[in-house]
Length: 505
Image 1 (spheres, rainbow, N blue to C red):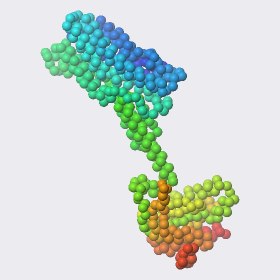
Image 2 (cartoon, rainbow, N blue to C red):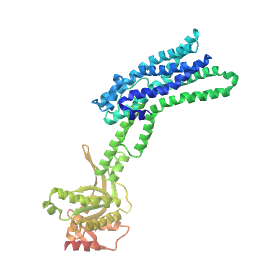
Image 3 (spheres, one colour):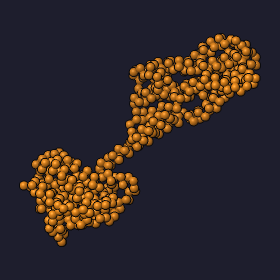
Image 4 (tube, rainbow, N blue to C red):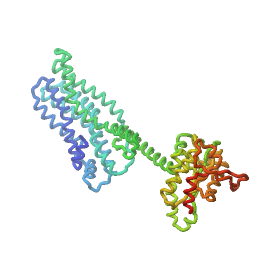
């Protein structure tokens, strides 16, 4: 209701709210006035109703001051005048607090005067009028406790939401006292008191003691039907932040961090909405960091670092299969082209290498200029790591030939052995790496592919570790490797070797 009123009457919103509040408050005060007339056994209902209608209009004008200086700042902002959003937002809070303070005093006096006036119209006098004045003061206080804070927050919410959405003001707002919880608890007591008094008066008017409890139930239902809509209109908008919070948690659970909750109440619920927004911002930042982390770190390694403590890679001995991938004749080609083209070609190659390694269960440990080092069996265990490495190498060679049509040729060396897998570094810069002779042998075997003309070479240790030995394996003999005192037996794939020789020709 209030949102519709704001959308339709922004530039004269205070007057529109005055009219809506009059229509909501009138049934409540009419019920009181007509109840007094009936209690006095009078028939002057029309006169009492006329006084109440005019009195409610005047009373709400004095309390709300529609078109006043404070609220005009908000209406001018809504009309597009030169009013900054921060001033308009602050005006809603200053106006709301002054309205509450003014409303408490005015309402108590006015309701007491209304009850006395209606009592006089109905023919009451003397001590009875004093009783009506006391009842009016108490009823007015109860009415304020029930509706004033909630009505103020409900009517100003659409304006605050519109202003807050037009600029970033943050989530820190002035805090009112008492808190929302205190307002609610006191209002519940006031509601109970108001219904009890109204029910007692109706019970006396209709002589419930003579007609029995059935009439009491009917009168109670009638009170709910008359007063209930006003209470619902007062409180349901005030609880909107709870609905916003429920919808926000569903969005966050689905991974959507794009929408902030409107922080439009200067009480506990406003503080809760602000806390939710700060939490959501933190989650969004964590998601961005995790996305960046996953871009620069292998997904398997990133997941393990996030799930476990930072000492997870202190160093452990593992049997793994190591694979080196290198581009043939890249250095002379890079000298004859631009740096941008060289980087683009490298990235195009690694668009093949990385998925092929990851899909086979391996881990791309590092990029080495125009090559890459991959490991199968670390940091996580991998059954059949030698088979996985060979499968990945064959897929890389196939895709390179398919995508680049001979424009890029690669050499791949594979070796199986024991390494130390762990974290090295210091001063805040750490790196997961492999240390051991098996790594050096794989690098030397990759260099050996230039001499044999093969795209893929496997050491005898890798062949022995294979669960399934391909029929296409060709023994390339034993070779001395740089830095090794003995010789290393290597094998190639026949079909791969033929394809490589064809490329060389």
